[in-house]
Image (cartoon, rainbow, N blue to C red; front, side, top):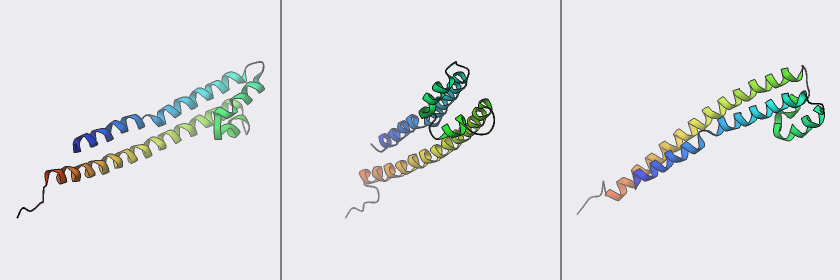
Length: 120
């Protein structure tokens, strides 16, 4: 049973680990859509429609210093740096989770085996 708990923690880690990568891919797709929308005849309407998908970076991408392509390039760099930091943070939390669960499962296994129990 103790090994099953550790295995389940590892399985959980495999589902959580790709989250920063998925977010980065979604943001890359939105930034590509911004560049494509900027050359369309109805560019302002299309860019306004993409504002919710850009989230907190909408202001920096849609307005600010430089051309739209320069602003998108700066946002790509910021997004990639955030993704790397998120991945590092998630990795540390998952290693901690697996370590704690392993220790708890080991204690559970010892308790089930009765190790340390003195028999009269």
